[in-house]
Image 1 (cartoon, rainbow, N blue to C red):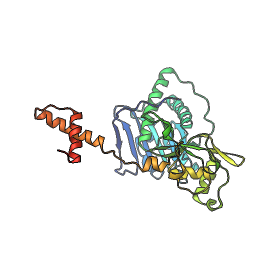
Image 2: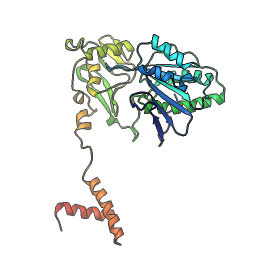
Image 3: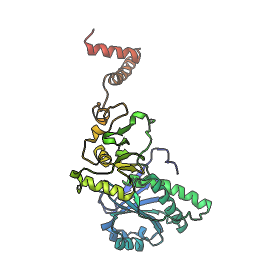
Image 4: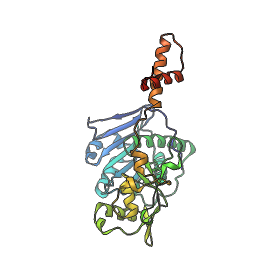
Length: 335
């Protein structure tokens, strides 16, 4: 799998051709020739009047998942974008928004588009964030080395722009901590004989591959949103039934710890209390019952740093440590 690019500062421009932030949006990295255009399905006629609709393009059709199961995507390429999107508008029901990758210089060729289509399907499946509607992804198309190098750069740009516009198709749902992972970051759910493992992330709660839950749901959630969620997870292959248990076959992102625990336990719950570290501390205790900002030493050090500047400006000596001691004395009321 292609490694994610090293994060670096970038300037991304989002243009609103009709002035509506909920309408058509055009994203681009200002120094590159690739742009991604987000088109709400309702606004296909407006997009069809834009010159970009007549280019060779790679496109993505996205459908949401309000029930908490996997959102869906279809990845395609075409030399006649206007006609292809019109056909999908007639024939495919699931999608709500099309995201179209084109070249600002109209230099994208059918060879580029064929390779990118195949490459994107492979990497979307490896990321496991969306359920793709492509069926058989086919074999790797023959692509000359210079064009393949172009495609990898185009993919890198497209990946960033898709995520910026709110569609992180190629980003794994469970990513290593940027500060270096520790075992404390993994939580377990072991109530009622389950063996769940998960991560609390900035997007929600990820249940990890191999987690084992109960097959049967309690009667009170059958027919509810929670019951339907479990059914969808089984239908889509995220969970697989094994006797009286279910097993997660891939990492899956839930919007809350409670939904993640419901998928395993088959009952309503408070996920903040069900998920625990291996030494028994609840997710609530680890992530919610801690101060958002630290005081004490950190506050004193920041204050002392400011006082160092003031001391130096007055021509006085002194170290941060001595100023910390002064600050401690100030707080305790000592002379």
